[in-house]
Length: 134
Length: 337
Image (cartoon, rainbow over all chains, first blue to last red; front, side, top):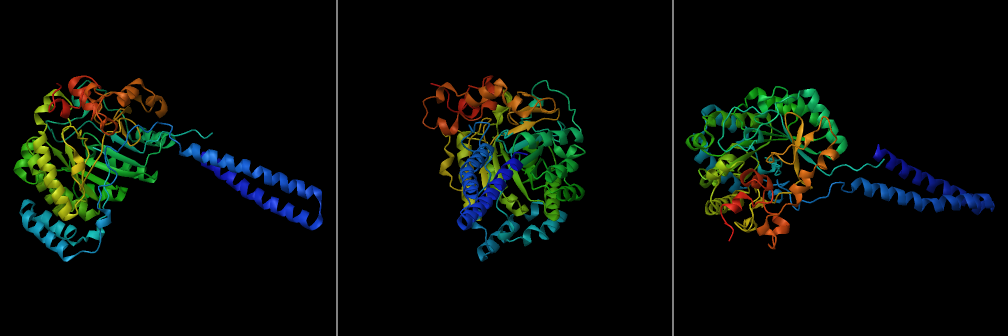
C-alpha cells in the first residue's frame, strides 16, 4: 500500500510536468495569461510533489528498529565468489585427490550417486554463497 | 500510511522440539528449562509468515527444530514461504534425508540445506553425536546432490572433534558442499563447558581450515562469534566471521513451535506470541533492550568492544545467569583479574 501511494505521487509528478509543459507552450503561442498561471502553478507544485516522494522513499527505507549489530552473526556470504571460473587442471587434480582420499568413507551406493553429480560439477556450477543461521 | 517495518530480514522457525538424535551439547532452549508444548499447525505458521511479511522485511527463513524433517508439513511450509518471495534454508542433521525427502525439498524450492557434519569418519561421528547415522547422513547428502538442492555442512567444534575440522572440510568438498560453517560450541548450560574447545585447539583448527579454504577455494565461515581477546579471527584471511548483532540489524529472531518469539535460537527468553501480538510489540519487550545493551564489566574499556560487543549474551546468561556476564569462551579462558 505504501509503495502504491509512493508510485502514485511519482505518477502525479510526471502528469504535472506534462500539463505544465502544455500550458506554458500554449502561453508562448497565444499569450493567454490564464495558461501562464496554470503552467506556473503546476511548475511550482512540482518541487512539493518531489519532496513528498523523496520523504516517502526515505521513510520506507529507514530503519524502524535501530541497527545495533555491527556485523552479521552469520555471514551472508562465505566468500570466494570472485574465484569461481572455468575448471583448471589444478581443480581436476584436487578433485581427484579428494576422491582418492575420501571415497572409501561412503557406501558404494552413495559414491555412485556422488559420481553422477558432484564429481561432474565445475567450479562455475558452484554458486559460492551460503547463508543462514544455526 | 508509511508505517515503517522492522528491519529484520532473517528468521528461524523451530518447527518441532522433536529430534532423532541426542547430541549432548544441544543448545535448544526447551531441553534446559520448562517450555510450552508445541501447538502450531501449518495454518498457524502461514499466518506467522504473512505477519512477518507485513511487519518486517523477511528475505530468508530458516526451518529448524529439533529436527525439522520430523515435522510432517515441512515441505508444504517451505513451498508457501517460497511463494511469498523468501528464500528457505533447512537446518537438519541429515539423517532423515532420503530420495523422497530430497526430491520434495527441491520441489518446494528450498534454497539451501545446512547439514550438521561434525566428523569425516564413522567412529568420530559416533563419538561426537552419540549416533550411528554417519552413513545415513552421507547418503542423504548424495540425495540432495541428485535432487539439485544446494547444501553446506555445519561443523560444531567441540573439544573432541575440533582437530578434525580441516578433514571435515575436505570431506564436505568431496561430498559437494558449497561451504562449511565452523561453529565453535556455544554452551547452553554450565554442563556444556566441558565440551568447549580450548583456544589453542581452536587456533590450530582455524589455521588449518584457513589454509584448506585458500588452497581449494572452499568457502568457510566461523559463524559463532569468537571474542578477539581470546582469539582474533581477523588473522584468518579466508575465513569469514562476524559478531553477534544482539537483536539489531542482521539478527535472526526465532519463532518456536508454539509461536513464541525469541531474540535468537540460542536465547531462552520468550518475548511473547507472534500469533497474539504484533512484531513491534514483541520487539519492545524490555528483555530486547537489555539483550542489546548488556556489556560485561571487563569489556567496557576494551578498544574492540564496539565490534565484538562482548560475544554471545545468550550463552553468558545460560551459563553464568546474566546477560552482562562475559561470553563463556572468555569467562573460561580469560579469568577476570
